[in-house]
Structures are given as C-alpha cells and as structure tokens.
Length: 156
Image (tube, rainbow, N blue to C red; front, top):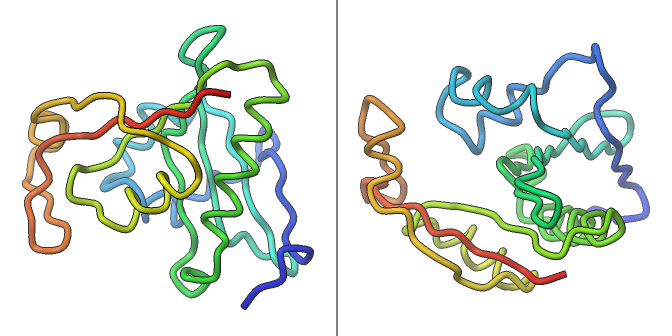
C-alpha cells in the first residue's frame, strides 16, 4: 500500500509533455484526448518523482467543473490512489469556488461507478449512444459494448 504522504499532486506546467500513456488508460484514442486536452487543467500525481496518475479537468461554466479524464498507472492501481486523487480534485474545485463537479463514464464501468459514488458523486443523467457516436469502432469493457455515458455529479 502506498502512503499518501509520499504522493505529490501538481498542475502540469505549460510546455511539459502531455502524459498520453496515462490518459490513454481512460480514453481510447490520442485523437480523442487531443480534442479536449489543450483546454484542460492537467493534474498529475507523482510518487518518487514518477508520474503515476493524471486528472484532466475543464471549466464547463463559472459554476461547474468537469473531470474529463482520470487514470492511475496500472502498476499503482488498487492502492487507493484514484480515490485519493478524486478527493483532492473535489477539494480543489471547492477551493476554486465551483458549486458542482461532474464526471462521466460508461454505464457498464463497474469499478469507476463504485469509486465515484464512494467519493460522493450521484447519478445525474445519461447520454444515450455516446460511445457509439464518438468512436468509429465498437469499444468493449467487461465484455459489454460501451453505448451510453452516465454523468455523475457532486454538489460542492
């Protein structure tokens, strides 16, 4: 188990390499990432000077921040880092004066849905056929084709 005191979170600096290898753990294509990443604030988590997690957020409006990508390097998963990162992002959104934080995931993404609800997010709405429209090839998770996106939100 990783000690959270050994983790550092920071915002990626302009000109730093975008951590595509981490972002691709939560998004299917580099092109998909490029559609939002340049308008995002990118938070990275470091452990012993290695990037082990990432979270990209965008401002939807003055009141709402959206997490559009969150991922933990595979060899660091199941150590509570994703949950810790979610709580840190919630805290930062609150400190920045947002009243709501939202996040979307596939309707069949069991681990993610559990994690987000554990952190306090609640179901808000469903975007029908999101993954069918967004990606040219079918995407499967846990043997189920991704079709709908579930949006969860937390009031800050």
